[in-house]
Length: 286
Image (cartoon, rainbow, N blue to C red; front, side):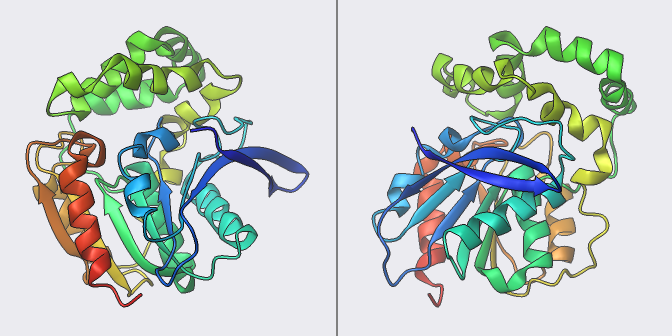
């Protein structure tokens, strides 16, 4: 997908370009905006965007620091990306959207929904991050903190910022590892070679508080229609541990578990994912 670019002043005296795609035509149906997850890009929605663009406008963006968007040394985290969404909606003159977010993009969507609930018709979360299981392996904690230290973090980024590293990161997120194709690996590896990629990729381990939803009240300010879609075998965010915590934030949410998928059900089983999302949209009052 080629896409277009917008120039965004993301902080005082600092601006950068980010990529977006626009599909479909204006209709009576509410437009949709898709937000990718950590390390991902617009192309991770390649099996989904065109399906929904048959009936409505569909947009997707590369978050600042990822995909083909610029990668400045910015204050990466949920607040920054929520402001990117807000800016995009203003530029596109979109009063309300159906906001769909995967993983870290899902956490960003929750942050946006809480602070700007008037901008949403409905919210869809796909294996969202921002809330972690109570039981975290001590070794994982140690590694997470080690990656956050400047010297170790930069060294590890240099070591894994390639196709090998991208593949090692993707394999645990797919139930059927044959879906981790060379094409998918290259999609994730390419942005790692971009200038400044290290800033965004290391931000979650260096500044974890910027990526958490702990500060939001239970329930949050968004009271609109919400759908939570989850992969049955998501190892990073097991549904039996994480979904109850998201229900505290969004008690009105419908939940759907997609079998034989892990962290990326929209890409691993797009047929089921698209059907579930289409059914949710069909019952929406848009």
